Amino acid sequence: MLSALRKSIQSKPSYHEIQANVLAGLTVGVIALPLSMALAIASGVPPQHGLYTAIVAGIIIALSGGSKVNISGPTAAFVVILLPIVQQYGLGGLLVSGFMAGFILVLMGVGKFGKLIEIVPYPVIVGFTSGISVVIATFQIGDFLGLSIESLDGHYLDKLSTILFALPTLAWQETIIGVLTLTVLLVWPKFRSKIPGHLVALLIASTAAWLLSLSVDDFSVATIGSRFSFDINGVVGNGIPPILPTFEWPWNLPGADGAPIGISFELIRLLLPSAITIAILGALESLLCAVVADGMSGKKHNSNDELIGQGIGNIVSPLFGGLPATAAIARTAANVKTGGSLPLSSVIHGLFILLSILLLTPLLSYIPMASMAALLLMVAWNMSEAKYFIRTVKIAPRDDVVVLILCFLLTVLFDMTIAVGVGIGLAAMLFIRRSISLTQTAEIEADHADYDMPDNTVVYDINGALFFGSAHKALKTIASVRPDVRVVILDMSEVTLLDMSAIVAMESIANDLQQKNIALIINSLQPRMILKLRRAGIRKKIGKIAFSRTLNDSFELARKMPS
Image (cartoon, rainbow, N blue to C red; front, top):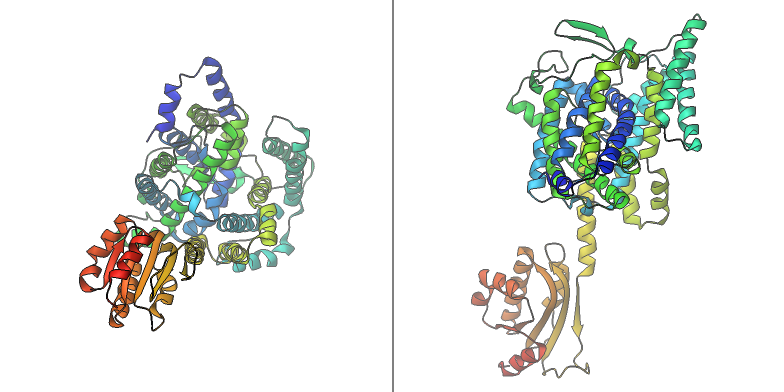
């Protein structure tokens, strides 16, 4: 815990390095400001909650985590999980889910699950992210085109149908601003300017919308100021409240019915699947981001400490109105490219957003909703991994293609909770299947030049792990031996694993051989596995069984055994 902060302090950074991190933090803050608002809106909550997330989680995770350069906050990956929670349980339910997910992440870090990213197959990750991007992009069509939609309810196909039926209500004013914003976002990178493209796009679009509203009579677009309002402690206004995040227990906040959601075992039971999904996705996202950041910066993160830091950040963030958070690859990459090398840059990024709440909220209210939708369309495209999705479909083995498409479809058509469960389950099944294929049993021929095999003896060479998936396959050939055989030798020098299923299978085979008056010799099995067999009582129950260290010892034992 706190490994990134400790290492940063121990490195005794120079004044130049500190200055570089301050500038990097300001740059990332400029990038994170509109993104945080857009992601909160996409998640179904007012934009200030995204800003609170970037401030609280961004600072706390940086100070308590295991990566020096990760920038944490709201991310697009969470949108498809958070939006259904908001629709069903309201803001209170969302924050309680994030609060629970924080504890799960801490337990994952304490339990040394930091290598989690390594056991999730590439097709599963690409399937999730591509599915998420499609859902995010679809939900932005309404604001991008200014469609008249009261609410998007139901599953993906229901929502898509609602959007399609609403197309005749297209507002040309909103569409012009949305297209203008998207055009700037696409063109600006070609200038290779250090100024973030989305900042330029929002400035141009907001200015254009304001000027057109003054010069054209019927030109009017929805903005953050017109869409959102607040009433906090008697302070009423439109847009984003110019108030710092304040402490409040998340269960005191309103649910979907407007009343405080409260806290109960039943609520925890209902929200637990969502909390687990948030924790798993947050862990994958943050560790993947840390791996990418290590490659860019040349530094090394502590994966378990990073999970603990992410957990602490997600525990504290809901207490101040923040959404679930994780490390963001785009913001982290921008941090490294602009000189970020210490947790200081993430702290500065959070402080910049905090000052923006106090000083810039009147200006932020002028940002058009169509521009925010265009920004999220770009985010969705960038995270879609379209190139890698197509490449995987073209060149990957059939099993991986099936997993990729299934995870993609489940994410789009159902929800992330189902997709995460099925995806991880498929990953485990594929691993077991491939491990089974690596476990082989082969009979060594009696006339092999390297062996002086006794008469009426057969030797089976077993390679690989003997576990519940492979034990029966590996041992079933031993059950049927020639009538003239009196000794069976199992060469297990290359057996790497022996679980209870394998022990039971071996016991069954040994009993069967004993009934046929055939002796069993186990050769070169590792001592810890021999101990497992002895604890299971196999040697006591079965008379004609022995252990040996080498094949020559096994042959000597075979010659001494009565026929």
